[in-house]
Length: 193
Image 1 (cartoon, helix red, strand yellow):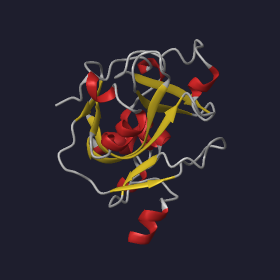
Image 2 (tube, one colour):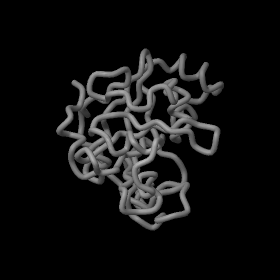
Image 3 (cartoon, one colour):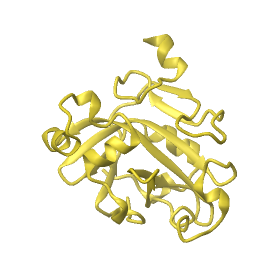
Image 4 (cartoon, rainbow, N blue to C red):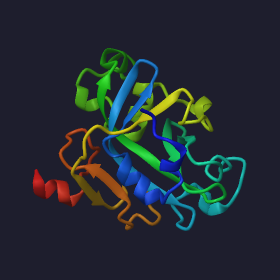
């Protein structure tokens, strides 16, 4: 069952944690979310920090929509807009464990190993064929579906990665038992491994 609007209309940090274990589906491909990061307009790593612009208007919109943007001119990145309308906040989907359409993902990514299919935010959008045209689309009833999790994962928390501003904030959430989490792993996972 798809997650409802009330799920996304909460603290972006709660949503980021609670998305771990949920499934993202686009067309014939799907993966279980194993890593997320939360971003809020009050900190400089969030695109909404600059205020309402043409680029950030989706972030300030209704919760439960996809915010898809181009990163470094190379990859599209998928985010779920959270919190009440008017507050710029979103969860970056950082990594998936592939569960459906693996042959299609391998073809799109040009790799053979399952571990290489969705272990990063740019990899997973390529594998699921999520592009800029899906920015602003509804996660509630649009082409990208986010489905409820079937089991409670063990969560590891760490600092966000791949950014230079506010990188020290502990707003990265991972399935502590998944090998599909992008590297470097949070310290909690390294200790458990």
